[in-house]
Image (cartoon, helix red, strand yellow):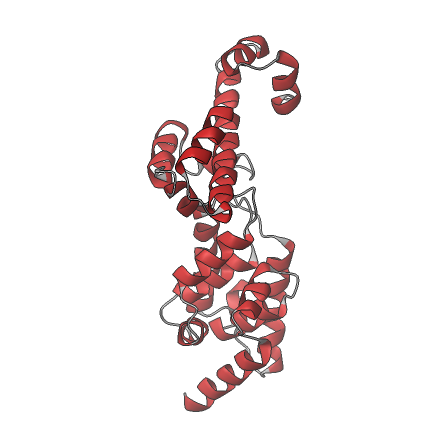
Length: 177
Length: 69
């Protein structure tokens, strides 16, 4: 399936792992895919998100809020004067990269959460529905929004970005292209 | 952990949402650090008793939490 991904879509999927690591989540969720997509400069999906006011930093803050009490929130630690990045740097110096999240993942490789897997499937279906043979960042965006069990779908809804709006934005951008 | 929790209560914002979130994050960080240190100690041949003494908890507690390999 990945061979049909455009460069932008592929890059977003690859960058999602980094987003997960940064939040020490232990899995790659739809929220990490969404953040990575918003941070990807070239693709249509990222441009649509940023145009709707959902940049990577906004979405990271949303994702942290949704992560619940078991996750480490660097901003919250900063209110106590704890510099999490510095803690992380020192721990990794001793125990190696990704050490702080390793307890919740298997040997460096971070697994996709079920909803994230589903969103990749749904991006394939979104591409098919639009009659495209490739899977682009815009299909990925629609797939993420359609994975209604995922955190990203909830984040988008809270921001008033529903599926209809996204579909309209994608259709409009495709007409303009 | 009790010390850390107290510290959080003293220093943090008067807004409970902010303060509690900071405590929860601190606890998550603490759990991660404990996992790493215990695993490292075991790898270096420390006994459960030695680890328990260093953490100031019972051997049963530490074994129950970090045991099985």
